[in-house]
Length: 294
Image (cartoon, rainbow, N blue to C red; front, side):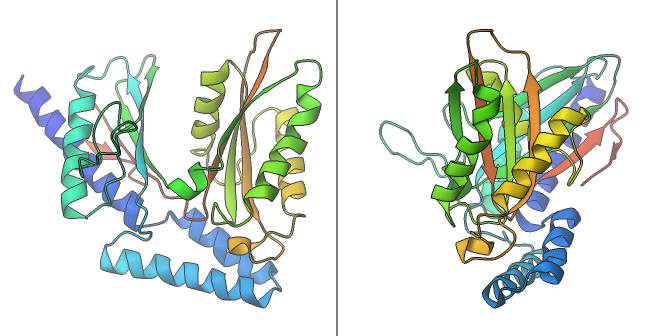
């Protein structure tokens, strides 16, 4: 019992640290991606905006303050080994870490009752924060990833129920139209997560999970990787550019995940992420040792 209590405390502390990293530090791969754009972009205003973004990243990290005033809705992805000593209580552990983070980092409270519009000012409430659980067989490791999701990019998210007879051919054009209409609203350059197939719920979950894939890592299936590249190229021809002000690069990456679908339906989920792709994760083993912190 004492050992489990000790591990719970370590998880809670690691969660708080991850929330702080995710809201105050942009992962190196994102910073490098924006830095590389400076070498490609010839739009003066885009270069100015990119330099401001990079400067903002450095300031947030140095001052340990959120890099965006919208600290988002905190999404938690749990990969739980079936041999890990703790198999429950994750919701309460996460809530404790969120409450502490909201008060001490601090975070803007982004949980509002959909009926009364009341805000408890703690980023908690009915069915939040979102928690996604995946059980890993033959593993004694727990991995938790924190993904803050800001409102501007989230508002561009879509679910499409397409005709199975031509859904695969149509979905790229439909997504391009959405991004074109959104313009600068999602704070480009953006990252797109797309879920193809499954049912309506699963396609959206797959789209959100796709955002967690390492930068520029194409899907293992060549036919899906080909679609990712095609869609990325088409979006970057829209001339929306950095913050919607024009330029070569509108989208940093497109990531697609798939699931088998019902023959009579073709759901497509689209989750859009802003240029400030904030996330953090850690792993902890059955001995309570924490490693692989990002």
